[in-house]
Image 1 (cartoon, rainbow, N blue to C red):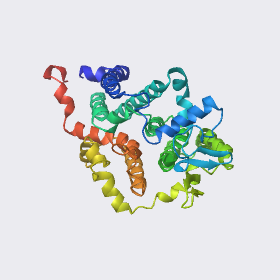
Image 2 (image 1 turned 90 degrees about the vertical axis):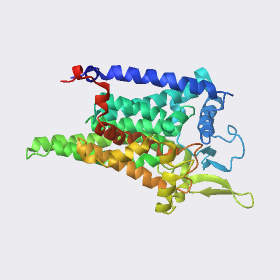
Image 3 (image 1 turned 135 degrees about the vertical axis):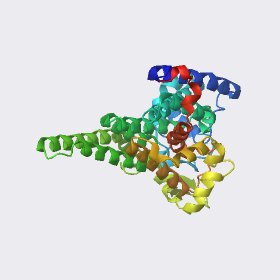
Image 4 (image 1 turned 60 degrees about the vertical axis):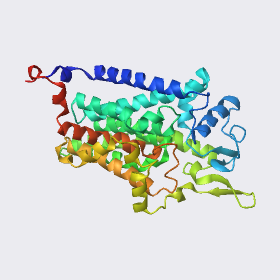
Length: 383
């Protein structure tokens, strides 16, 4: 056995965090021209939630946002203009802003990005050698959109962290913690819902597979686990539905369904943003892959290795886990292939961050096929 294989996870994670600190800190310093320079697009409106909570003690944003409140970034609620976007990330990052101001949000985002890449490493170790998983995490830290989005206040990184963490714990059979994090991931980003649905179906099947005997006590025990998992998931969703009820009068109505825009005569129009998922799917697939500025293949060159790795899926074990990850990637990709506003990112495609992060297991598969471990071994180290 080689020395690299004997190193514990903590050592690899420490090395990864050190590497991320070394590459991300100079990037952030070099771009920090003004305190708000890292805010892009929707980021202003997530920050506005924090401003409103700290300054006014409410979620009415008309006096906390720059520009026209009818520009499509706010929703009409019971008490006026309220957040269109989920409020979980502002709530979690509020202490960072309260303590450090603008740099606090940037620090929060950098920590978030580092956690995401640690999760990339941990998920890969479920299928591959630690050395291969570490190399893949390094490649994804520097050869994907995560390098650019480290300088940001990104709700997509935040929601991807929650979803990947939930997925990791489900694959580890820690279904209660996984279910809780998956519930929060929907609060963080509503389009995570179909991905969460697939992961939870896998979790339920895994529970029943482990309990398939004729023993009535075992069946009762399995049923109890399933019910408890559902309860934990619903508890995690409760803050989301409660927020919807407070803002819009119904737990099942979100800000995306009550987007405020200006009509032709200056009147306020309510638009259901979910109606924007009607782009022809094959057109969307081509754009998501090959658009020069936003296509994931051209802006994340590491994904070419992932494509090669997908061609050798049968080499990966456990097989059911890798098929689950492939299903999650395909669902997110096809969902946003239908989205009319798929290109509303300042670089690459922020809507596909989970897709990019989970594609890492296929990259590891290709690297493992190349025998990359042997490049770091000497004959004297090998059994």
